[in-house]
Image (cartoon, rainbow, N blue to C red; front, side):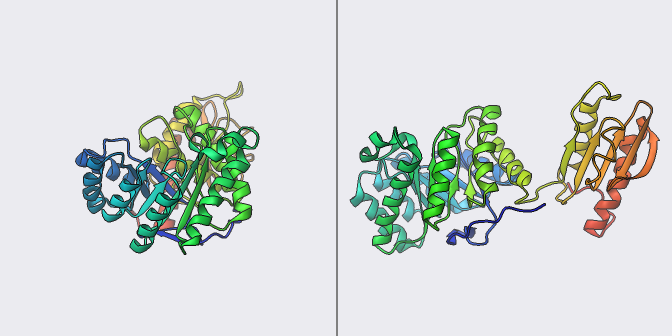
Amino acid sequence: MNLPERKKTRNVMVGNVAIGGNAPVVIESMTNTKTTDVDSSLKQIRSLVGAGCELIRVAVPDPDSVAALKEIVRHSPIPVIADIHFDYRLALAAIQCGAAKIRINPGNIGGKARFTEVARHAKAAGIPIRIGVNAGSLEKKFRDQYRQKPAETLVESALSSVDILESIGFYQVVVSLKSSEVFTTIQANRLFSEQSSYPLHLGVTEAGLPETGAIKSAIGIGTLLAEGIGDTFRVSLTADPAEEISVARRILQAIGLRIFEPELISCPTCGRCETDLVTLTKSVEKIISGLRLPLRIAVMGCAVNGPGEAREADLGLCAGRKQGLVFMKGEVVKTVQVDNLIDAFKTVLDEQVNTYYGRSEKYPE
């Protein structure tokens, strides 16, 4: 697969996680527990890490949350980003608590002086700031022009905040430009990328419930990543944050930027299909789940879409009415009764796993 050429951006460290530069695109999420419930928050963070989350954002809406943040930072297995709105003093306290990054929306932090004070403290602590520019909470001076030029206005807001930070010699900056409108999000990030080398955090904000939100995010985030734009992102869903991680990994894998598991391809069902292709495909998906191997696996439902059409697959199977085929790179390696097709597929897959892992172990747990 020909990977998109990544735009070269500044390297920013969030704890021990690199954003920008030559670093892989980083997956983020946000806790939806009450921050003051430290045990529940840490439990969710650990669960998200297990799903593949690499940076976690935690809401800090009040002083009680600040005290809890200190404990969360101390015990979190990944760097913690403090999400601050309205009260700049919460940002100052979060810095003292050891947050690895501060996320601020310039539109609601209370003006230039307070924004600058937060930046001075972050600079002294050696941590970055994410400038989070959202369509729904722009600075007052930008709100009217947003109606006519939404993408351009988001960029103007972000660059004005960058200028403030650079005026005090602060360059550990990540920028996000988000809208619930997919095209506005794409256009804003394209424009900013043309004018600045600061790393971009991508996302379609308030994307919605899982199905709709996943589609919006795949189009918005996926388009930008395919153009080489974006260094980190969150898929924002009205759902369990674990679903955000699942969609994020699939977006990265579909583009080819990162490999988390074998790629599964399967033909659509049609009148030629002589087997329960949905059940067969789900069985294969379960078998390959958890394998971190750069394999392309094909499940085909008839001779028309069999080894020939799936010639580029590393490994595949094709089911007919009575017989099934297991093939590699378009060449048939086993012909079996349909009832034995899954077992035959497992046997050949075992051989591939052994080749990659160099041992006789079956599937990694």
